[in-house]
Image 1 (cartoon, rainbow, N blue to C red):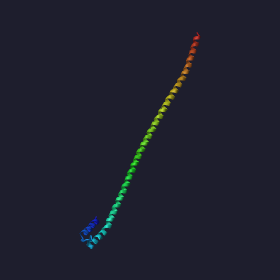
Image 2 (cartoon, rainbow, N blue to C red):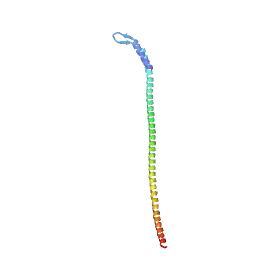
Image 3 (cartoon, one colour):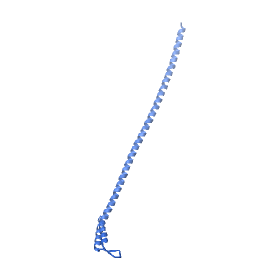
Length: 148
């Protein structure tokens, strides 16, 4: 920075100036010092503006980085939520399929038992009818035997 260079010049002028014995004072050329101070005054606003711009730019970059970081985190959270939701949907579908299979097995068992009971009832009825027919046949045979 040019201001620092000019301040070094002032320091050099002071160090190289004529010293007054026992007074700890130095004689310097007033014009040289005032000229350097004038240059500093001219340069300083530009350097302050530049420093201010750098500070603001740094702040803007930090804010952008913060916003970008938050956006990345938000996207990651959305993706995680979507994955969890898909996993939950898969779990629910699995649970429903297990319930459907269990219900189907219960229904099939009830149908088998019902069909077996129905078949048993039919066979029982057929047995009764056949028993009655056999009884009738025996009676008819006995009647035929008695006719001789």
